[in-house]
Image (cartoon, rainbow, N blue to C red):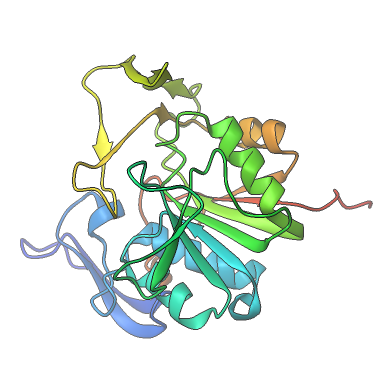
Length: 253
């Protein structure tokens, strides 16, 4: 059911893929991406879309080697860490040594300090590499996706959410890194939340749908962009596309 009263912009009874409960999703604002929440686990639409894709494509995910880059303290990342015995978290902290493992207050208990553009993990380490809204913050996405492809096992996949703000327009760079200094190409600079830095994470690229060809070209992975609109699962909002890059040959038909 829907209810456009002064109290709620939208309500709908359904099933949450993140916490696996029957719930009434509610939003008090028109911007559903951040406000259309599950009352049980506080998940938002892009997290529910990501969880559905993980379950649909990798139903045995609990037994796989999963690396999540820059996981937040949301219930999706927490669930992956709790239920997957081979889950590895990584964070980017330039103040600490890269390639070392540190403790922190997350269900994963520890994280490996990694630069996604130059990772310390061995080749073919993971079945799945997950990133939630990370690729709009890296300075060299071509290096990051090559490193992800290197660390994937054969038949593995990277699964990511990225806000596709440019849609059919070409992707554009907002900031670059020149000899260690940030060069802002579009003002004012934009920042998003950062799980380990209260100053936030700088947005470096506004992506369009051409992200699929870009990532595919630089990684050799075969990418799909999945768009889900299923209000019964609480998956309805702008900018909640899920990308999957498979490390496997194209099927012969």
